[in-house]
Length: 364
Image (cartoon, rainbow, N blue to C red; front, side, top):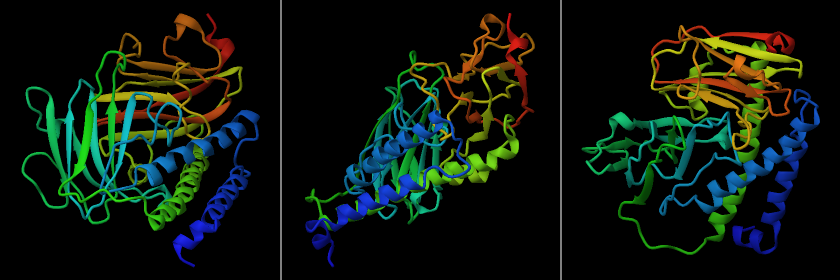
């Protein structure tokens, strides 16, 4: 049966809906905490991933007419998304050539990467090219252009390989209220005419949508199972694993998980290394950052209050002890979840001490 026939008789849509139902049935495995909040957030997580996947595979999948969109933001999140970041994504093809035009803004850290693969392809998102702010030639007005292609170009050049299929931009802010984000546009060099929506391509887009949802949910649920071995502590991750999942090679990751009852708190202590940026965040079980629009769930090098000798003390707790712990982050009604300490551009990685304490011990 042709793609057009499958579309006309409704079979393509039924298949899409059936695959969504299957993902929903498989969401709550034995390893998933059985509290109501975690489980209802799990189903919301699937709706969020579906929104993101439709954006990626249906609305913004045309590598001939590329546009930037976001695969992680305030109401749809993936893999311990950074509350200090603005993320931009774009579908491209390594066999084609593109030109990015932009304005630097005032953002503190910026990286642009080309990637191959995705969470619907077994969780592999291999890096194929990398630029950061220091690599980009910028004129006096803050403007820049970047060639994106396989063949090396003079000036700003983001490499691609034959399998490259996306671009990921990270902008990391010290203080979102005081910094201007960079702006970007992209166009294919020597692109052809705009073509109507093609039934074959649309069905392929639908068929790609649900594997992304399932693959993303499965990947980070698997990570949470791995993190059980070091719950309530923050050892360094396998950095290769992080890169394969879309991580930035300039970032050193300490992903983990936490579990706390309301009468317990997690005390985290470390001396930050010299680096371009660092931050710590609290997330839910699905590795979505807790809602930073309404709660204090992260701290960075600018917002943290340091002890006299430079020590950073962070408290993760359902209870706010006040001035005694100025870097207190809320669990926002959760009793388990993920957490992440990341360093950008660090060359050494000091020990991170963690300790579960009784809330009674931290009360003024």
